[in-house]
Image (cartoon, rainbow, N blue to C red; front, side, top):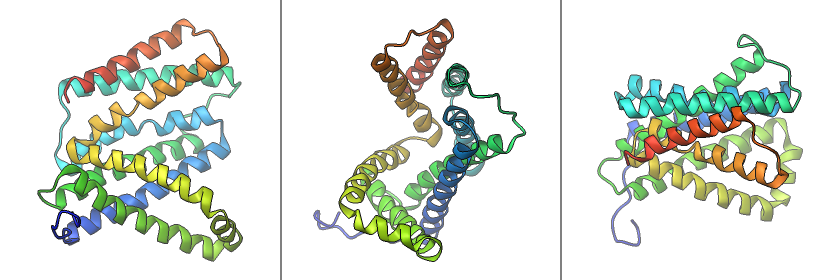
Length: 247
C-alpha cells in the first residue's frame, strides 16, 4: 500500500479488539497443545486438538453469522472421521494408551482446538473490520499487528520468568530469523485465505497438510497402509475435495 502511494488503513477499535484477541487465543492454544503433548503421546494430543475443524464451524456461525453450506458441513464431518481413524491407528502403533474424553489431556487438546478455532474466526473478523481492501493487503496489515503483539507478549513473559531462555533465543538470532520468516510467510497465506473465505472452509481445506505429511511419512518409512488407513485417507480426501470444489 505504501509503495502504491495509498495510506495505511486506520486501526479502528473493532480491528484492534479482534486481532489482539485472536493473537492471544493463538498463544494460549499453542501452550495448551504443548502441555497436552507432555502428558500424553503426540498423536493422541494432536487428535484432540483437531476438533478445531468442528469448533471453527460453530464459532463462525455464532460469532460472525457465517453458516457453512451443506457440502462444507459434510466435508467437515468426513474429514473429522478420517482424522479420528488415522489417530487411532497411529496411537496403536506407538503403543499409546487410550485417553478418556474426561482426562486432562483431552480437555487440554480440546481447549487448544477451541483457541485455534477462535483465533481463525477472529482473524477473519479483523480483516472484515478493515473495510474494502485487497485480501493480501488486509492479510499483511493484520499479520504485522498479530505477530507484533505476540512477540511483545512472549518476550515479556520470557524476561519475567525465563530470562536465560530469552538470552539464548537472542544469541541464536540467525536461526530464529529464518524460522520466523518461514512462519510469517505461512501465516500470510493463512490470513489471506481468511480474508477470502469463511474460516471453517479454510481450516478444513488446510487438512491437506495432514494428508501430505501422512503420505510422505509412509513413503519414507516404507510402511504398509492397512484397510482402516485407506478408508481414512479416502474420507480425508473427499472432505478436502468437497471444500475445494466450492472455491
